[in-house]
Length: 288
Image (cartoon, rainbow, N blue to C red; front, side, top):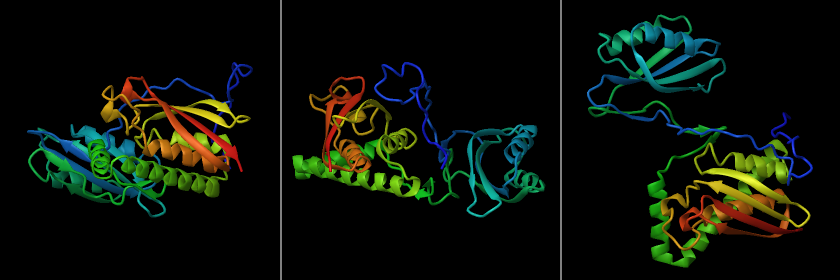
């Protein structure tokens, strides 16, 4: 199996772990699913092609030669060996091109097998219509707005009181345990290696930016810092209490399964809801 982590070499004598912490820059990941463009001629183009090098460059150059702008896009597997799908949101305003002429131009390329085009469902509103289901590493995902998630928490708490928050914690714990077991079975990961993979998934799935800051395996104590945690962001600087329940449970579940702990707990010591720059969690446990 390919190695999934990097050992830290510098400052190894004073480091809490061998984790390499690299400086990273982040940008908003805008999925090409919905586009709002008033007074523009826009369309979604879904291209099925042979899975060979250079297809994206070829399509881009052809569209550029027609002065067609690619606003966003993605390339993915077609679910069939030897084929891929390139989905683009394009702006062909003022080019003299039509939907049919664009389709015919693309179909004239030998590597292109099929082209489907979707136009705005309402003036200026273009919604992706070809991709389903939404997959990440082969597993189905659903998208939910942060406002919707926040509303669910508030509604559950208004009906069940603090019991609703306990329920959210238990749901998170179960989800964390299940994810950790999956990583064990598929990648044969254990201990901090499993934890590092689980925490690395937090960022691309939009939960936050997580970092394992302290590892004390002898005392069975770990600290995790999360910036812009989705669960607490709606309450930023507006609460006297820490607001993470689902993710706090998720962390406990991951560590419990990764280290095979008989007893475990996870406490949120700092929270962006109460004015901290990031949420900070302390996980402790007893080995079974």
